[in-house]
Figure 1 (cartoon, one colour):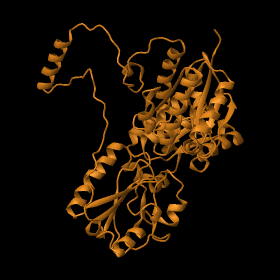
Figure 2: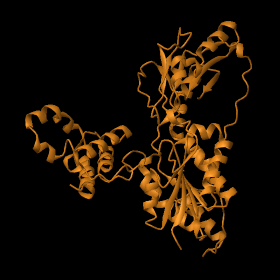
Figure 3: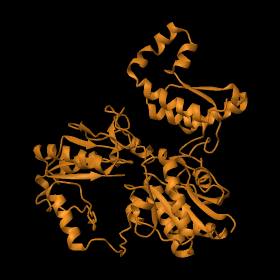
Figure 4: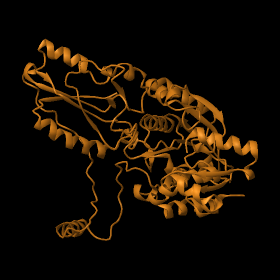
Length: 349
Length: 107
């Protein structure tokens, strides 16, 4: 058998075309391996060749999903590969969604073995882990070597149609697939063993992990808005100009609390965004576009709301861990309650 | 190492010859210093930049490594780096950077 033919999908950043400013790059195909493809090809050690690399900007893919998917599929089809690999996307949200979507499409519509890789908290992971194999990676490209080391063996197995082992063995994100096997001990015995361990406070591993839906039941509606104290909270990174608390442009480790007493309008001279994950031009020109202080002041004046809370809370949602976000909110929610806030408007980007 | 700096290192290695270039790192953290050292020797480990798959094999040192310290005027070193030398985790930095150098430097 000759070398395996692989088509590889990457975004504009890993193709060296550019960052956020080039994220609208339309799908294109180049012969051979590029960027992370070099690492993947090396990982196969001569058993495979990346015959083509498909490149698409993350924003373009996200905003034109159907068209982009169709275009990328055509490109992949043209090379009739034995295997398709996307990413790895690490913790890049839109890239992760694109990798998941295109991997799923190649597998389902072209019938070609396909896989991708990303960080477990990447939004693409939850969306696609059931339909495709997603190798679990670190949250930044520093984890490239480990990601490739896990992707190559699984890719080989997919191509040769070998039995794929459990997620923790092969390194992919659990897909919710259950398989029968013969156990040494019967179920009742295993259950009692587990219970005994639990009672003793020892480590035990469930055989049936419950899915984590993280659903938040909505609060009852605000009865009378005209008497309610409303607070603004944002993950869009709006901060006083100069970002006094140095909130990070991605993977934020903190949030800010800022006084807007007497502030009726966020202007280009007074506020800006610290967010590094979207084009900041329009937010910097008028930060009310992300944090609508001006409109709420109008509503305050018109008596539609009781009052606007004197502080707003802000962080950068870009790549920020879910665990950090929960921690921030747990802290400032207490303050909001203590300050008598009745409702919060949470704005994103 | 950011993409601009990768390009600068690559261009300079081409212009002056890789054997004539020494990269001096000033990063304050062992991990990032190690990644920078890896980038200019074995190639960009993130495979995102111009040095992806380009093992330049350059000579690389960190400013707190003894090899560099001994090569420069002790007074100037004390003035410019002495303070940082006290607050940085010098052992960890030396371990990371020298590991990369010993493994991947060609010159």
